[in-house]
Image 1: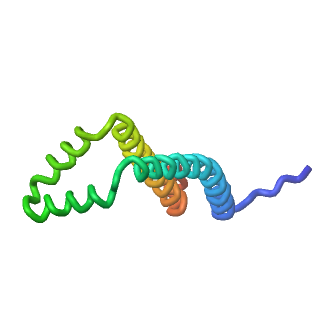
Image 2 (image 1 turned 90 degrees about the horizontal axis):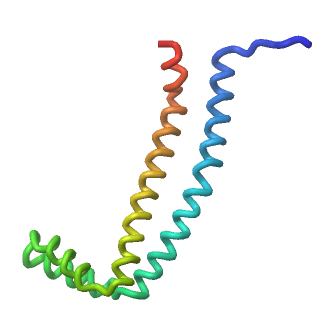
Length: 123
């Protein structure tokens, strides 16, 4: 069987495409699952909290005393019922995980696109 050698440039392009497909297939299910759970939690927050009223009160506090917004948010969270606290904590944690997943995916995509790993092998 005759084996043909591929040029390093073509091989690198193929590896980049394969890695992009692998990255997309790996990140997409996790991303969709996190978006679905985050959507459910946001729906729960909307059912438990009158968000418009919280925003109005926050803006009123901000217009009167901008440094008092943090204490307002802490007091609002402290006086909220336990289910509301749990849902809000869930939303914050999932939003942080989602942001981390997106930034990691973008960083990996940029590194592959710029052929960072190929250059590191030759250095």
